[in-house]
Structures are given as structure tokens and as C-alpha cells.
Length: 261
Image (cartoon, rainbow, N blue to C red; front, side, top):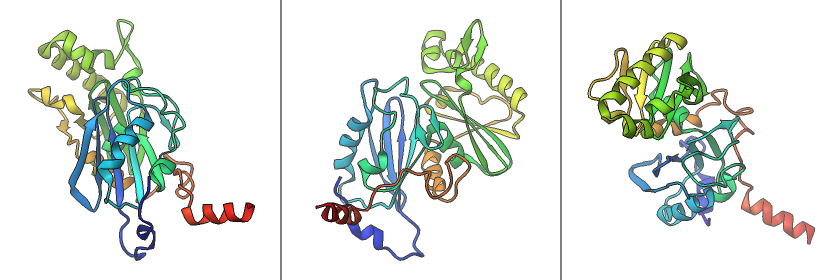
């Protein structure tokens, strides 16, 4: 992707412009931090690979400058690296280099962790994302803890997300699904002892009444979380400077080629 080099020479006291990507099982959403009113949104789906996503993203971002990239990914991320293809998208995500593809340094976390970071206001918070599955993360005294609670065994040989995910909502019907959400929330509250619980994800609007002790999240908080990812390390990368995938400087790369020649 050809991007202007001028972004690299901005004054040091200016805040970097963050491209935040929120990748979901049904849609990909993108925002650049200095232009929050301009949003990109397009369908994803079970056949979308990482390369296909970038191909769709490029024309939508034409003319939009950014300095860094934050990616919320709907699957397992370990120390800023995707380690498993997502269950609701296509293949080809493991090892994908967002920095090289988008031409800027990139940080990647689980999508629920990114929304949790954007929803946090202190203390001990549990975030649960009601979507295709069950996203989860905790914030504890400023530290981000990505989690995969949705895949833990729960009842009748099934895991949590098989009772509260999108497939369960369609199978059970809205009334029974709402009851399952309450039961799951209470179970996880008793186990993890958060001070408050934020319920996010696309299916939270199907809840007629929120479970006791919870509050409704906002999907826009994912974009807040993406910006916060670049404010400090949050313990989810190797260390603050090198954990992010870092795109090589185009000028240094060309100089290296000339030297070899």
C-alpha cells in the first residue's frame, strides 16, 4: 500500500494518528483517530482472509494518513501475534504481517480485549462480548488480561459460548437465551469477583433488561481501546518498543538494496 511519507515527519509533540481496525465475524470497521467522524465498514464472513480484508480496506483508506495501526482480532492472540485462525472468518490470519501490509507499525490484540481497554474506568472490570461467540477480557488495576472464557466447559459437556453465542440465541429463542446470559454472567462474576461488568458485542441489544451489576458497553469503545493500545504496553506485548510488528522504513530498505547491488 503506497502511503505518503510526510506522516513520519510530523512534530514530535503531536499525537500519532492511529488507524484502528475492529475485525468481526460479520463486519470489519475502521477509524483513524484524528478523523473519528469518518468510518469504514464492510462485510467480513466465513471466507475472508487477512489479505482479502486488506485488499478491501486499501481503497477506502486512500488519502487518509495514519502513523500506527491497532488491530482487534476475533481470535487467539499471544504477545501481539495471531496464533490461531478465527472460527468465524477464513484462513490465512496466523502470521499475517499487518505492519508490512499497511506500511506502519502495528499492534494486535483480541477484539474483546481492545473493547475492554476502551471501556475501562479503573479498578477490577470484567468485559463480556455477546456476539458470534463470547468474547472476554479483564482489566485489573490498569493491566489488560485477555481471556478465552467462552471456550471453557460449562454445562452438559458444552462451553459457555454454546449457551450465549449467536447460534444459541437462534436455537433457544430470545427468552431462553436471555436467561442463559444471566446465568453465565452470574457464574463468571462469582468466579472472577469483578467490581463491575461491561456487556458489549453486537447481541447486547437483544437484552431487554441487563443482568444485575452489569452495564451496557458501546462498540465505539473498541476504537478508544485501539488508541489506548499505543499509550503504553498493558502487559500484552513482549515489551513496549519491539512487541509491535514494525514496518521497515522504505528509505532504509531501498538503501539496503543499493548496498547489496
